Image (cartoon, rainbow, N blue to C red; front, side, top):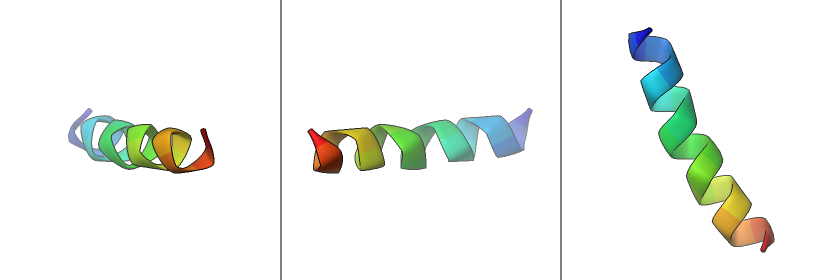
Length: 19
């Protein structure tokens, strides 16, 4: 689950950059 937390943080940054 620790991997999911790290992935979630990166995904949020990617979504913000795309938006």
